Length: 134
Image 1 (cartoon, rainbow, N blue to C red):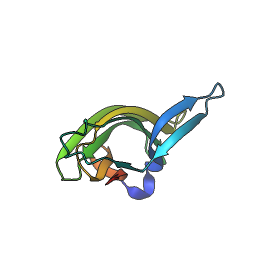
Image 2 (cartoon, one colour; image 1 turned 180 degrees about the vertical axis):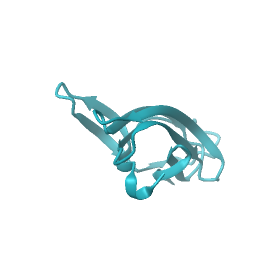
Image 3 (spheres, helix red, strand yellow; image 1 turned 90 degrees about the horizontal axis):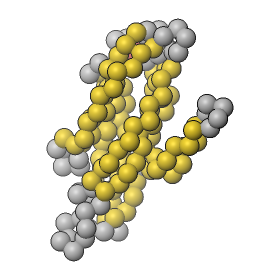
């Protein structure tokens, strides 16, 4: 896949909610790129689970046809986290794709969580979530 030919990342964020409007537009509510939490290693702290949305918009550029979009999560320690795959297609009638993926993310560590966005196993971008101790 040629970087010069696409696909191109128009948007890649984590948010709390997405409101779809009757005219086809979408409002992203509560964009999240970091948060402060209680010490997750403290046995008195219940496990924190975040319900977020990964919103990814791609422009096909010169690319047409089906592609596999993958989201690969990584914990701050480097261990692999959640992952998801979705088949998408770029066509002349629909040269852009927007995905709204629900994520249920357990947060057992302090640090930066990374979510790689790949097309056919090639890295396009990464979404990060910085988790700091309160």
